[in-house]
Image (cartoon, rainbow over all chains, first blue to last red; front, side, top):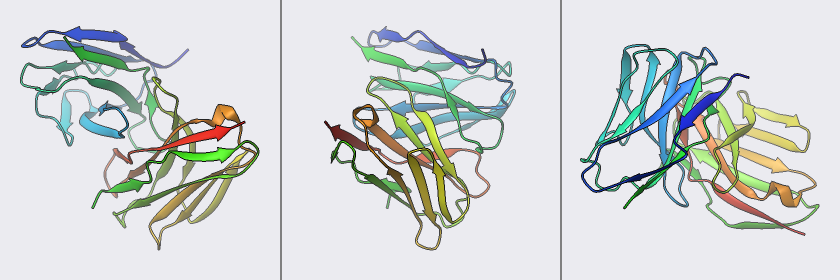
Length: 113
Length: 111
């Protein structure tokens, strides 16, 4: 079945550590997105990519980095520069236009310990 | 002003009644509008999309769009306890292949 796989489901980060969240899709979608969700809030865009080897910053890119070396993969690194990384991270993909909407992965819950 | 605004709720509706969720947006160039349902701890699930003024019905769900008023709504008829979730409104901007989300409305259906 086609879909988006995010891993791990839960991730714990120590202060000062970089961690990488995985996002893989087999939908043959061109565009991929990373959002962050804090409790009781909506989704805020971190980074997005519409083609391989190209990506753009979203509204809250500081402290994060991404790469898009393959169409299927869009990993997100949360760096030590991100001072408040505890959140629910969602990866999404679309055909390249926002219609007919996104397909979301199941999310990664990141906690700083 | 936020780009996409929703009443965060909680909105409490008795079982069997109509739940009405509202969303306003600021970009007049927006062309695509979506409603997502998100259960606690889960990822959002697309339930409705609408692109032109008027109503669009799918089962118990009706999306309504009024571009002149920059307003989109979601009606849920015959509300069920399983409809209890947070509903996210999402809008794209003209020429922008990305969605902007509202903060979500938490809906509770009371048996």
